[in-house]
Image: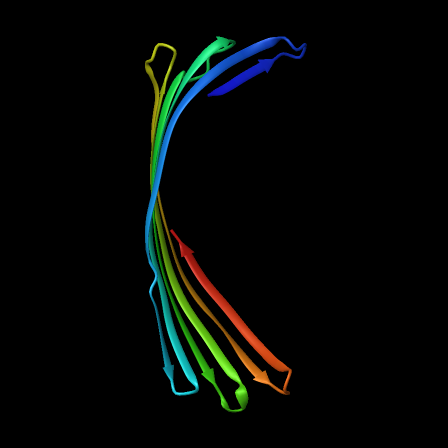
Length: 174
């Protein structure tokens, strides 16, 4: 229950509304996250990680308003539904190479894809319970990306090393 009260500049009541809301939301998701790794001798390691996730979220709500004092709102009754679906796919490749003298080269490459689709419906009824507004909104977006990163580490004494790293990313959204 939502209560709205408004007052004029002198403090006299000029608005009193009560909204009773019924809402229901549901979210479910499924994920797959495999990881594979290999060791090639003493100097090379290779690993592949993946993530595949699909999520669905739905929400339904209905508002019934009662005006005790003041102007009527545009909609005394309104209902809204939302359906949102998201799919995410990621892949990461990591290669580590150990050189003579203990220096290491660590290289990471990755790619990702994100797709999201939503649909929303809104119905608003006036004080006579006549349909005053029907709205339908759809939205779709996708994003693709590529990443490259790494680090070269060169020890120069027992307790010290020099490290040089890099990181790059490219993303495109539609």
